[in-house]
Image (cartoon, rainbow, N blue to C red; front, side, top):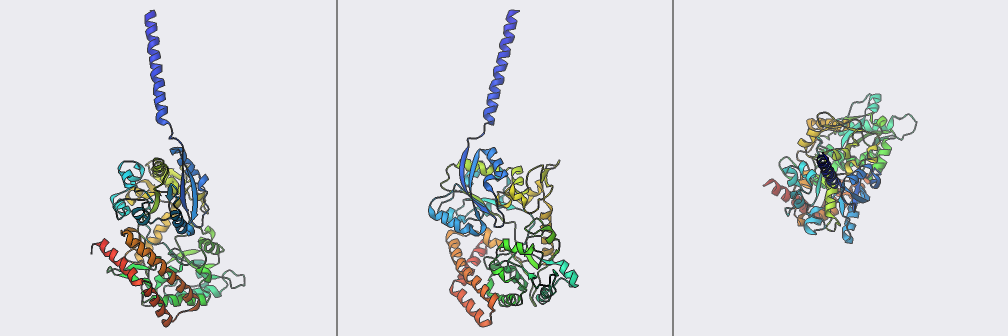
Length: 515
């Protein structure tokens, strides 16, 4: 009997030891990685103040990975300058996050950021690579065959940046129809100016509000009325595959003359030349503006009680012209890069890849599960509601974070929020109306591979040409322009390399198309 008891005690002791060993093994398996601190240069949108250091989302990623990030946040308007100064200094952060990066220059040529394709092939970025497809990988591959960046992609059926919106409440009060031509638009804007729409007895209405050199809120969009899809690169491709340099187009002169008329008659806010998006939105939110272009109405910088007065309108067209706005494609933007001097590449990869885990990634854009986001029984994630006044930026990075969602995968896991469906509806209207350029300029800027020499030459030429063009636009808009002055402007552009610039893009485009 005693022997049997001893055997039972020994067996129980063995079981206990095995259980303790199992617990120890489990604890070791669940042991968090050793805490690491890395430095990151982080892009920040111009009209948002984001506390990256204490953002709930990044605290959660730190909890999961053991990686703490010291953020240096840089506004959009300062990004390019600060990036150049950083690389020139010889002292680099471990990570470069969002914004933009010339990977041909800093990766292929100077080797200041690390190639990441090897880590992908080794399975070191499993969440990220699981969401890529072959097309995505090809588009991210640089001229030397390596990949120096993690891409940022949100597929959401968007085909243009700036839709036009007009104050439907003002039109209704005045008994006016939505204008369809440039002449009709002049008459509507004059009526907005002269009819004391806010009833305060002061001529303080802003018939047309804008910023300057962009294709969301800028006056660049107004060139679409003359069939010129003016973009920040000044080049575009027609249906026949011919490359055009926008200032040389037939409609460019009447377009700038029209802009001068708008400013001369106080129909376009003259401060559009210098103001940024913060001032632009503040003016519209006073409820005193007749027309503008913007990404969409809902969940933007616009106050809901102001936005509700506006309706989508098609771009008007000049006589004999067909309206053409710049076209977008599912654009793969720069997401992240690891610098060549990164102090801990393993930690950097771990921290980045954690953000591409499906729930983490969707939360980064839409907010916490159970709060603004829910997971449905079918496994898809659905937005419950979108906080007003861009409140999401207080907890999650939204477009300042990491995201990789090609269309088929995205549709399999996500039900878009209403504001994204709103944008898709606008895009469908513009597509059906045929008011977009036939070939997206994004193929020229973000898809076609340029070698380091081509990229550097295009960049230098663009800097010079943009300076000439924007200075001339300011002069033409404020002082007017005749055919003689315009001819001198074109000659100055030719002397600065406009034809070489156009031909470079044409050569790269034909090579990409296999012509």
